[in-house]
Amino acid sequence: MNFDHLLQLFVVKEKSFFPLFVQSAENISSAAALLLQQTQESDPDERRMLSHRIKERETEGDSITHQIVDVLMNAYITPFDRDDIHDLAEGLDGFLDSIRDSSKKISIYQPKHSKKLSEIAEYISKAANLMVEATKHFDSLRKDAKEIDRICDEIKEIEHIVDDIYESYMSNLFEFEKDPIELVKKKNIAQALEDTSDVAKAVSSKIRSIVVKNS
Image (cartoon, rainbow, N blue to C red; front, top):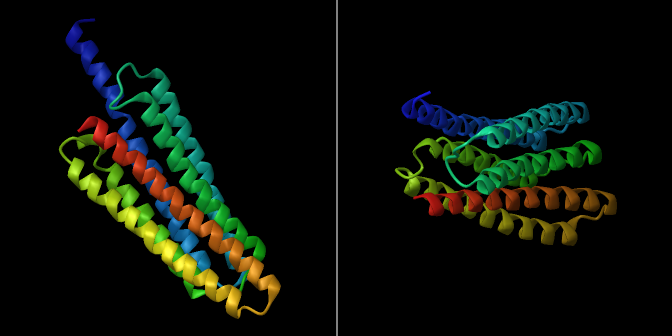
């Protein structure tokens, strides 16, 4: 095998990461859209059905993460640092796990409908969509570094907005909700959603770190 052919094989291995990261982000985006739908739904059976569909996305996400790790273990040359690839794969998986955790709480607690919880879920969905956009630039990371950085800024801003909504919501909840059981339900769900937004920001920070190292 001559050197040029060997180098070509390395490049193929390198590029195989990119579609997997896009696939992972798209799967998360699908789960986030289902979560938003779940927060807008009041029927208990529909909520449980949507939770089951998010569980399916979680299973698919685990499979994608496993594929990324398999490629990583067999690749001779990687597009960026091996630890960064692994950490990003795990971070994306954690984002999906947080969406799933929020969904489970809605399915189990069956709270009364809240526009503010839906508003937070909508921002989580926006962050997930931005994650898809960012991963689609990985195959031209150096050229698109500024665009990826802009996307990361948007995700960071979403986390700040969610923090403000969460703080206001919790304040009003403790002041005006007279049913202690309903209060606990909504408090736990709101916390899970806010945590999910924090995880999205952490993933965007990892993406920004990769860009800085490789641009």
